[in-house]
Length: 286
Image (cartoon, rainbow, N blue to C red; front, side, top):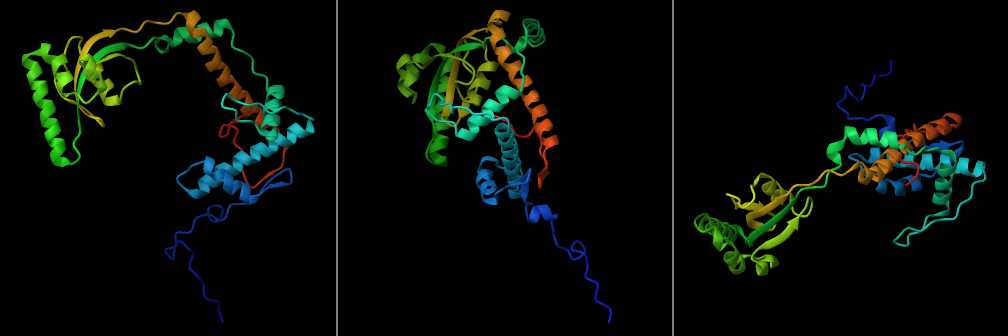
């Protein structure tokens, strides 16, 4: 009797993923197994669209950690755990890894010439932001569609009144605005980037000083009538002020490259089973 030939999963219409997507492999670093339970716990720190991707990222992170700990123990490295400003303490293993990286990964500080060259090539990044002196009248949203429409109509009527009598702004703010700034005639003071919601900032960027925005500015807080009192142009930072920022940025970038190279060196000497290590994917020191 000839055995019946079964169709391939694809031919039968089955959505079968590769084996690693159905059952993650056992992960070992120089013969030391990474427990599945530890990987499962670690996945919460590696959100991904698919559970298997979170699992792989968690497994990779723990494999890198194990590889570094093994090297720290081989070199006899010990370290005292540190605490941050909030009182959180490193674990003994975190301290060992930090000390290993500090000892084995050389990160030269960028010199003044390198920093100045970066400064000249990126001058637009080293500029104080513009500040805006702003006043507004806030009419909050209604609780339902009808009330919200009434709120918008009220705000539109105030905006129309200001078109004929701009000097009435402060009085109308005190009378109608739901913002505490009404006590100052709607004045918000000087506003810089990130201090207001994006819609409000976008409106300010389009305005000329002394003008009321010709349309209502709608945000999650409600309907705003906005007046730009004045704009204070941001000034360019001198190199002396920008240099510490550049030193930190370039130093961090060089450190990441050096750490990846060090990890590649360690992985090349180790026996890694069940996962491919990518030094660019996981920082060596959290």
